Image 1 (cartoon, rainbow, N blue to C red):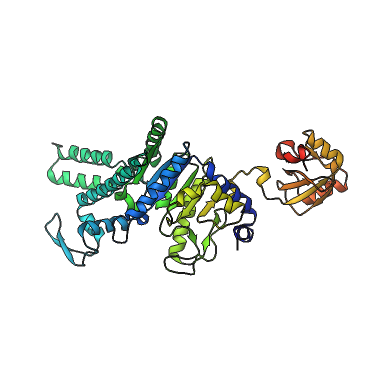
Image 2: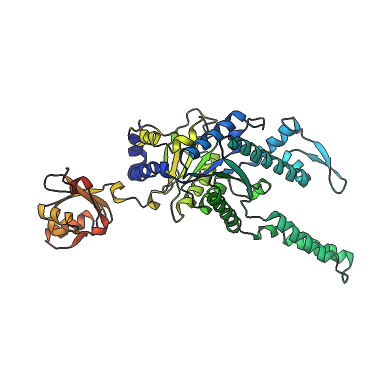
Length: 465
């Protein structure tokens, strides 16, 4: 089955929207790439230097081949990978159960997970996060500098948390209670406990929009002054447990900077019917329309949840004032990213019907397709006088229509053919096929297609058909 057969079978009327979206990829200017740590590391937690070098070379070639392209890299991943980094740094693969630590009250408690170890020592956790982020920025900085590009790191919390400012506010409030001369010690303790209980989310007061607004302004400023900058945006992993999923975080960054497209790179890559890492019978979705409900094959609870998160991220981007398509792909070749925007590779897909190496998620109803690219629901045949009138920039009137073919609704796109069955153009009709047939039978004169909703075939207007 080639790509066109796939579209006809699974995407039906979404076919034009998918092809239109794919054809626009080479012209994309602002590109957000969400890369998971799992794509750049081994199972041991150490970096896969080969993949990292290929990724850097790939992005560099994309930017160096088109001076107008701007790339923002978002590094986000699950808490699992931070645990793996901890294991790798400790030179071990796991922590045995029942290992003990001494807490603040000098009581001994069993530890049965790395999360508990990190929760026990917040300074260790913060240091680990800083270490991982520093490693990422340094690796990217060194790698991109070889291609005359500069990487710069930002840390943004998906919860919009101003951690430092929030902690200062908490400490100042506690301090003000502690130094109250009119309160007894037990009253101070009670007041502080009450304050902490009611202020668990006090650092959540800074909205994600406000945080990303500052980041966006900085990125735009960098692009203006030094366009060969590559911002590396890292999610504040210490807030990961209660934060957005990876694609959701990157999607909100893409919306904030008004990107043209977002790419999600992960080990699983494309969207599949079942988990491809666990089932070799998994089938990929080359295209997915988020306006439809989840397909039947997604029966596994984990896969449904994963799909739901990706669809939510894609829908949020499609609801943006300008639809942003989302591409899902594994990093399995040195030119994976560059090929997504290479005109020849896209032509192989759109013209020759070759299968894509990525899944593209769009909402066909949110894409304002040019009339010439829309699904043709029916055909209207017109006489010679009507054809001349259309060439003179007139609207299409019912009196010039000889017959109608197809069953279509109002606002459907139809092809307009002359007496020689040559397509003059296409337009969006104000009447359904049944309503139009009734107008023809009653010889009622009405405007069927307004001039503003009509596109004339350029070759026809030049007399070349």
